[in-house]
Image (cartoon, rainbow, N blue to C red):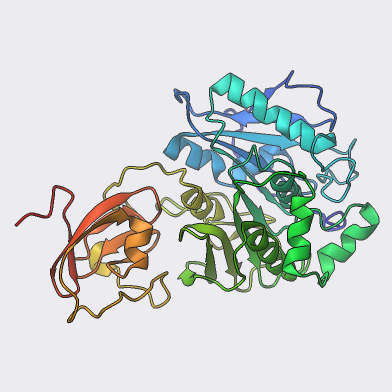
Length: 407
């Protein structure tokens, strides 16, 4: 039940001067503390991320090590770090297993909702772009919050966590943590639908992160989370695409009916229990390693791309990102073959977002960036929010033609 795991960080602590406590955010029935980080000069209308720590951790631990503050500076958004304590739980775990505390309108869940309302009022955050993420017990609570408040959270990320409402009592928590619950996707989906009866969507887009060698929270929980949220979305459990990422990570993408990623499952080979981070100065690096902050891949960075926190403008390849000349098309990129081979179909022009350009076989992805096939021109970040026009000048050779395709 994520109580005996200990989750003691023991990591060197950076200065927390940028992290401030916010009081007076509501009735606070869950007896939580609210901390926030807001980049200097942040304009209104920006996204908001809620980040939940693991057992025996604090808001400061998560602020220092998760990488979310770094990304907030880079991309421009606010972060709220809720904190629980020993008065609520002996090991300072969020109560993901207690239906009196983790359901809509009650306890810790309501306290977090009140924090969101306070942050939106204080910082002018965009209420349509609020996201929640967490580690371990915090991830279990994040999953519950996505089910409780799908009208509040546009997306979520669950690292080394458990399905929403897997347990409703502390006694049932260890079973969820350690073993397969043998529920169908529909039964898992029903737990979400029952959390806010009558709600019909839209549903949050969910990222799931789990190490294959996690002995604290069995990796089957990642599969159950996949089953749960794909069922909620009304899509199948077969991946639309798979891709290899750094740190021995395999990404499986599950698209919605419009072809957009709705659920993403990141499995990290050989990783134990913790939040995947990747310290360094490169574009895809973030966070600090320590106990339960594991140096594999920056989950916060890839989650931010999935949510679109990086914004809508393309940029040249920054330091630390692969150059076009060293960016061969990966063997397992999310791609679908064009309807005709390059030698038989007519040449033409296509305007679309980078994700769809890759999916259509006109570009490839490497290190989180999209590159035009043939020319290897850097198209910017591989996501749904950067759009380019690609012109095919010869069979299989594409160039960026944003100024138009004439000539």
